[in-house]
Length: 272
Length: 272
Image 1 (cartoon, rainbow over the protein chains, first blue to last red):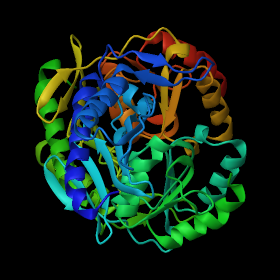
Image 2: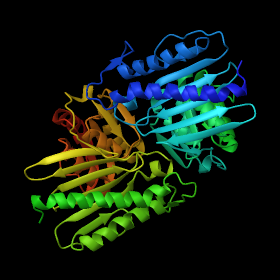
Image 3: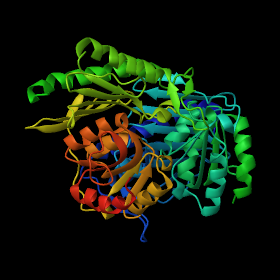
Image 4: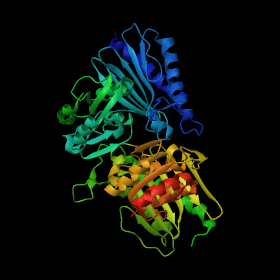
């Protein structure tokens, strides 16, 4: 199990994993030679790039050397079982479509899960030079943003309710028709709604600039790190029924409990 | 009129205008004290911030001192008539919604129009530290990206047609129902479509990472600089009938003539 005294060293390690992933992926960002493969055999377009694979390999090489007893759950390779009770949940490039479009809203996601909850969550954007980090200890929960060497504490912001809220989601395509109805029912209540920025939306909730993210069709590696980050910054992240969402599916992340409660009251009718 | 020999000094001035706008707006970006006003009296949400107004005032102060005979057309103040035949077309913060959400895909837009066409177009993103610049001279057209002191030439990329294209637009809200049909008819043909990034999408076309932007309901200050930038980088920017779009309305920006022609063949049926 994980004791709070281990967290600083593990957080340092998590940051080194993000460094290694960025060093592997960034040379491919905006490269004219980047080839987007296609993981799906059907008509969908699911780009997988050499950058994704290189970044996950870089992360796994460090974990294999330094944390051989921990499990690893990543997007690009088969899961690695562990014996320590700790699992690293990683997405080397969340937002591959943004990545291959030259748009710096993709991120490297790194979470450490202790079997009961996420304890560390990182969203890293190396082109902008931003790293959002959240750590949940028993006694102390904190989050910060490092931007090109400058570090400041971040927290979610208060928001009185949906009517005052800013809402983000990635794209209408992530929802089933029924889920889309639920999303739209929330969207109609908010002040401002925008599409398009993948994991970066959760980072903006954690930093107190956005109030709400509503998504679906998530995998564990999409949501583990963003959820731990937002929670460490003071927010609430659940599925559409108020339960644990860290293994994927539908997600509802809010900076303020009032916003979360209002959205949950709507989305509950559309939950899996 | 504008001679090509004047362009280097005017380009330097345009860059200083972007510097001044960034210096005025950036301190407000992600400020917890930012107040978003509401320009509309109805139910829409059209945020105007102190940052917009301060950035336009900073630009206009320089132009009043150094180019008193040029016209100025900006988002926040009434147009200033000029006698030189040159007009600066500026949007201090394009993407105010992104700005107030902490998302660094807004930009400062600066164009210089000679009465017949845009000659300089700048999209500047000061948080990331990126400045996309396009200059159209009679003899020489060129574009470049400066990113935190590093400068490299940019060009649009070749793309054989819509089936291979990446398409961006800001949000479904910018289209009338009829225009939305036209947009969707194009979207169905492309490989990858995404929402959400305002002027930054045109910058990515200019830099060769995105193939197509389709928008509507634009004002002159929304499109003048992006259009000049994309054209200077080798792309084609027109309205949905193939005509001049630099004063606003519907816009179709493509990096490759083949993509532009295919999209135009579809959108022509939905043109104003």
